[in-house]
Length: 106
Image (tube, rainbow, N blue to C red; front, side):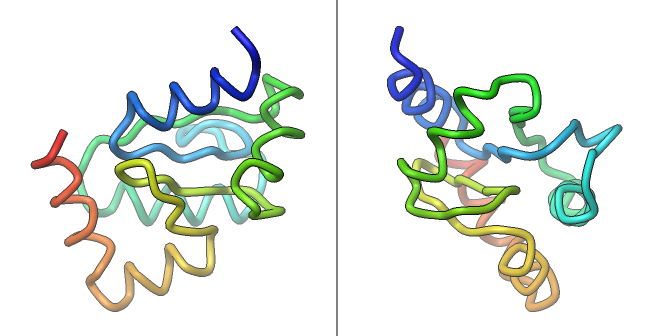
């Protein structure tokens, strides 16, 4: 399977997916830590991909997404954004609504 097809499958198969550096339990950068903490605080399960374990995903995803940085939050096949957008959505209460809707639609 090509790396692009693998990324598309990951996004399609996971209604809530966070591409991050490290894991939610052991993030490898502050932005990934804040993003995964924001998602975890909503109490809704999410999938994640540690991009540090797959250099092909780390280099291909920014081109596919047209988003240059990590973390990247994908919900129901759509790129939501990175850490700043995730934390703004959390602060406004919208993140919980978005994640709950994705959970219902899976």
